[in-house]
Amino acid sequence: MQLRLTGITKRFGSQTALAGLSLDMAEFKALAVIGPSGGGKTTLLRVIGGLTAPDGGELEIDGERIGFDEESLLAHRRRIGTVFQAYNLFPHLSALENITLPLTRVHGIPPAEARDQALALLERFQLAPHAAKRPAELSGGQQQRVAIARAMAIRPRFLLLDEPTSALDPEMTAEVLDIIMELRSEGRDIIMATHHMGFARSVADRCLFVCDGVAAEEGPATELFGNPRSDKLRNFLAKVLKY
Image 1 (cartoon, rainbow, N blue to C red):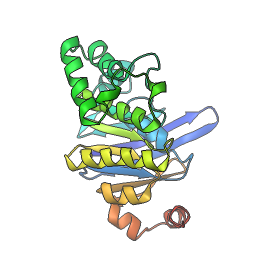
Image 2: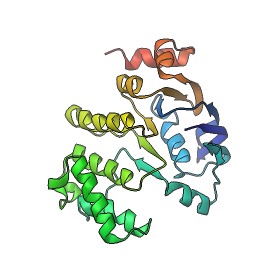
Image 3: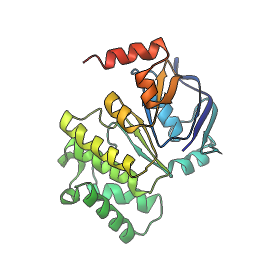
Image 4: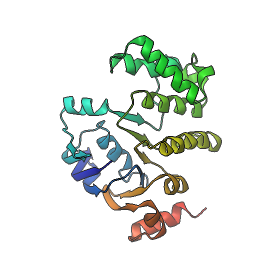
């Protein structure tokens, strides 16, 4: 996929989250977005995913300009599989129902077909025995796998993953990263914000360093990690790769 952002700005009160961010990214399959906390990664992903309208600027995906009116954003969101840090599952619904609900309510898929799709995904992600359980009865790793299954169920244009392992312990993190690696190997287009530098380097073909609300550096992942050009990226990598 291709991604172009021009002068994207976003403020929350007195805080500037994105400060005229511009990016013209060559063809990629998996993009890792890295950078310090509070640097603008999550806001950028929310703009790309149509979850947050910027205050100004333009967004193009695969040559298609995305409108920022509510109708255009809604249509855009429906084509993207989004996975959040905090799972965002409905607590009163079962794992199965969390997957079928958007299929039937948002995408108009008949209930029987939606159920078949959901069961197939639960089986694939080793969640079939937990189909009737509510989120509170699942581990963090299982909840995130349900969230990924829900994102995959809509047959998305691409997957947007915002720090999908930040709330997980190391064992559960490995479970989720294995699934993402598997999806990547199948050729799924992925944009993912992550603090796992080793995983970013191995799964992504391109990497974007976001700092102070701008696209501070981008390029092939191997080059960005192996030969950072800016002092900010060098200092960031020195800190996160220290231990």
